Length: 452
Ligand SMILES: Cc1cc2nc3c(=O)[nH]c(=O)nc-3n(C[C@H](O)[C@H](O)[C@H](O)COP(=O)(O)OP(=O)(O)OC[C@H]3O[C@@H](n4cnc5c(N)ncnc54)[C@H](O)[C@@H]3O)c2cc1C
Image (cartoon, rainbow, N blue to C red):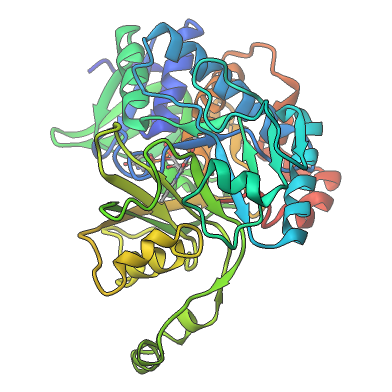
């Protein structure tokens, strides 16, 4: 192992790997990726692997960043023969509430004005609407206001659904395949992977000087011109190695995978979201049992945001489902512990969207629950850019959008490090934004918006 590097990156999750890829594309010769575990395995292989360019304001930062990321992913998919199986099924936000459909339309219009594509409102049965487009992907949004029309295209949805918003620049992909492709290409251009735990970053005169890494062969000190903190849930802890305090916290999010023997939705379905809160339909006995074990909260109204999609190739029976009904803020701690009732609660909630899920009452399929931390800022915008110590950068707080944003975020980070011209949207993500009173004034309007 050489004892110097141009850029040392802490963390080989999707963020660190995308940064290494873009740094090498930009011509940086010597990049060192420092990883304590297996690359891409702490959070980056636990996601639903979905993407969308549907983002709220204020400001066009998120729409521009994710659009750029998706442009880069589209290009890489083309070059690689779609090695990471990117599709364009869309996100279908469903509601049983006419007022909420109006809100969804307003949210689409806001996002559209920020650059996410046109909004098409369909009061009737538009002939131009295609539920799933593979070869000529549509951009923007379709607002489906006619209940019968929604059920013609999606007959497996609950009759209670009265309308839907179909976000078209959206879908999913294999995050592992994308991450591996980026890692391979970064390594082919000279990136080295050092297995070990970053322990310290030494500075001199306010500049990064070196990093110290505990490896199985002992502690290694590497002189580094630049240091990038891409430590995922450990972002805050690693920042403290350079004396920085980042405004981040971690929220635990779970997902469940089941073999969908009840065929809750067809294999061609988009990602489907129930955008209404709901109270679960427990029997009197179940209610008593829940009270007895102290789970009264499950009898109350639970939040909107339950989402599900088919997983794997057409022949696969698998379905993924998520519902952020309980997302505690925690200090990161592994192994993770999830609600023992998670699968049951999510499948019960899914009935409100797709009634075939009722088949799982009392007959829960063999399920696997996993997940990880959403590392986030209070306004749910990432941190990408320099911190106060010269030569030190952060790339993180990627919350529930780190995979879809990684290509754009990695490119932006590389632009900061190399000193090339930054895109206008970079200002929304630099840590120094909190020093701007105008930005701080916007924070309350940003909180709680745009998260799945
Ligand atoms: C349930 C769930 C669903 C999600 N769904 C989606 C989705 O549909 N679409 C989407 O875009 N995103 C989604 N996400 C979010 C996405 O998974 C994350 O934003 C992304 O994986 C974060 O990547 P990261 O590289 O920042 O962090 P990580 O993947 O956690 O990588 C950080 C790496 O840093 C290493 N590290 C930390 N400290 C040190 C140290 N001191 N020394 C050495 N190595 C260190 C860790 O070992 C780890 O490998 C989801 C997340 C969850 C939990």
